[in-house]
Image (cartoon, rainbow over all chains, first blue to last red; front, side):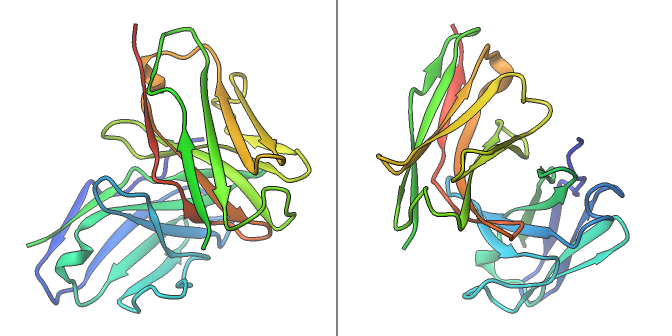
Length: 110
Length: 120
């Protein structure tokens, strides 16, 4: 059970859009529509931002959106804002009641 | 509002057992609506799912840790626990407890996390 692969860092200017990729395998992302994304500010607990690939929990800005193609999921942040600067992790349900997380991406707002 | 709070020793010696507890408020660990989870984050690394327990007592563990992990629940105290045996420096991490809604496939509430260092 290997970690999902994410870029180490992504940056953008305020107002721009950025996309974070999350590459898995046919045993996790490719086989299930159960990808979730978490935002983590330094010293804080992770916060759920996207679940079931595309769904947003109540209270999460619609600037955050998710998608999936094959074994790769993506998180897009539109209209980038300073408060979006954080670490982002993807996660996927995998076979036999297990879960796998991504390696994490640091988003920097320039 | 659901709140989860981890507690336990911040320092554990190599080869010993790491023991943590997660106190739950605003919800019941005996409810069949939730699974109760442990997740960890090693320094500078990503998150790693450890396992979770259902109200029935059924447990599911990360295959890479299964031989050393036990997760249990104490309904009288509304808390659940993690025991990780034979620890090494590689088990140094921030340990989080989290909640998963039964039938869903994400973790909606997390504790603040507690740092456990394995060192002699």
